[in-house]
Length: 612
Ligand code: F6R
Image (cartoon, rainbow, N blue to C red; front, side):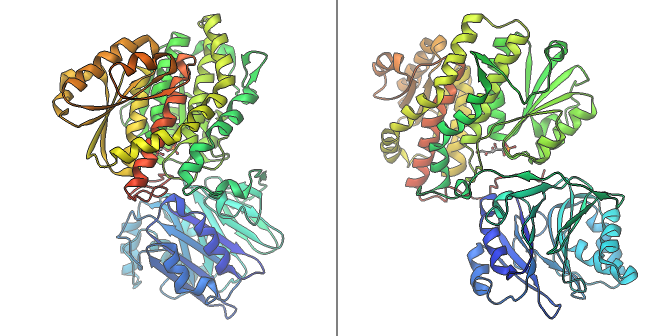
């Protein structure tokens, strides 16, 4: 969602802030701004609606803003329209404070009314401005920046990652966090805050993640952190070991295409260290066999594509463990009075580890006593930190808004969890386990084979990018796979698309199939191939144009009915969607490319959804 970066050091701040913000663009934003304290102890603020380039042009790449300490922000509107005034940073009326804020101040109306009664004039429609105005109000009482921050934090309710500047204390940034991501970067004679490590990795790889309730004071000399009771906290530092290039396009026209092609490598990272002597071994999982046996209920909770991974995981977990598994949308779970207690395992899946709905579901489950096992990509993210157990997907930074490599690695990890649980419970068939482990080892290589055929998909996309509506059909694993294929297509190409369990067509949807309707028929799951074929025949009989996806061993059979058949290598049934998703990602990508869409930053979407 919104992005935060802050810098204090000896270099000019504005160009560093602009560069940091450019690395946060992928999160989605509608306006951007920076604030820099000048050598004359004045806070200068520049902000503008639209692309970061507009802001950069406005301040000539930062040259117009002299000063070595500053904060920058990319905003994704929640309270108040996306415009110059509502963009951050917000300045207090007397010009003493500048504030950037991610999250939502829930009691801002009440605070705003209070301040207006005190004679304060507000400029914006945002909830965030109250923080700047309240800071100045308290500062005028206590004349102490840190103390004023403390008073503000005790007064505001809601979620926040805050970066704050005070004209009277031009050597420091104060940062605070509650329920919104914020990290500290330790440099040499310079220090940083950021909502995301990509914003500062060019300058430092030493970071610490702020916890809820913590406040940090950053100067050129160091960073001091305090807890909610203003007691000093010793932060654990983490070394970020991925390369800066991992967050750059590396010759690809779009991050999404780069990330699609990075999937085999990402899978190797996620799978290889966890296969030992023909077994799935999670050194990073704390759960014991006794605990696994004691769970009476298993939930999988997630949003969007991560939820689709959960749907696939349900099939596999139930099959391998013979335990019933419920999959829930995080945004629904928290409000459905779920039957969760201390004998429940909740598996939480999230790429970013910051999705607010998922986080809220996690907290709801935790409050009811559940054990939380999360599958997360972003190391040190909020979900990772609040879980009892975390398995990282090690996909590397995912920049494109539409997830690809995070999805694939989540799926591989969940498949491995299912195998490990199946074994722990003594429920999995030994031959099936062995085959799955062998095929997991081969999965990255097989995915490379699928990627080699990307031109076939590009050609097909070139013929079909003009459809108004596209249907995905499949059964069982192929149905859950179709949901992901359909989501990829609609989010980046803006084509209306639906995914259906093929057996449901005749209960209503088939009425929408007419001459020329494009149907992507998924028939990779061998056990139900004949059923899939009969659905293909049904839609063809109504005039549909069919693109079929199946395995190499079923190609000839499918080709008897369908002229365009894409294939994936045969593998263990539970791993078929891991290969099947690749042609669907590529199809969405090439269709969006033909339609001239902004592939990496689709309209209305953000990478990390930190609002409800
Ligand atoms: C779709 C997509 C989203 C995310 C969803 C959850 O391409 O990326 O549907 O999967 O917003 O995000 P995470 O996994 O970060 O919790």
